[in-house]
Length: 150
Image (cartoon, rainbow, N blue to C red; front, top):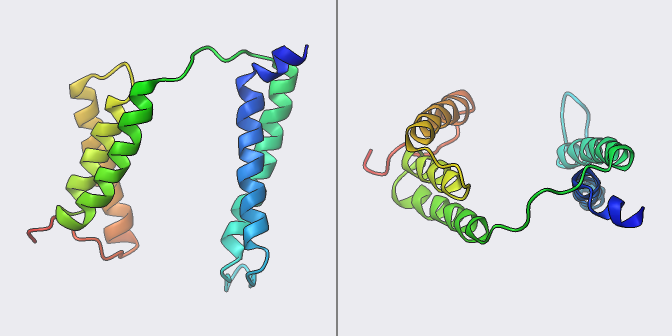
C-alpha cells in the first residue's frame, strides 16, 4: 500500500503545493498584511500561500483516495530545454524586447515536449504574446519595451 501511495502523481503534486504554499506563508509572515483595500507587502504571499496549501490539501486527499500511478519518467530534453528557454527569455528582454523574448520562451517551452507541431506552436506564441502585451504593457502599464529597436 505504501508503494502505491508514493507512486501517485496527485500525492506528489499535493505535497509540492503544500510545501511551496507553506514556504510562502512562512516567508511572508513578517511583512505587514494591511487590508483588502490597502494591501501591505505580506498580503499577497499570505493569500497565495494559503490558497496553495488548501489546493494542495485537496489534491493530496484526492491522490490518497484514487492512487493513480505516475505514468512517465524524467525527460532529459525537458530538463535542458526549459531552463535554457527561461535564460533566453531573461537575456532577450533587455536586448530584443518583450515580444521577441516571449515568443522565444513559448517556442522553447514547446520544444521541450515530444509533440511539437510548428503551426500550432507559432499560433500559440502569437496569441500568448498578444494577450501578454495587452495585459502587462497596455493594461497594467508596465514599462516593458515591446521591441528593442523602438
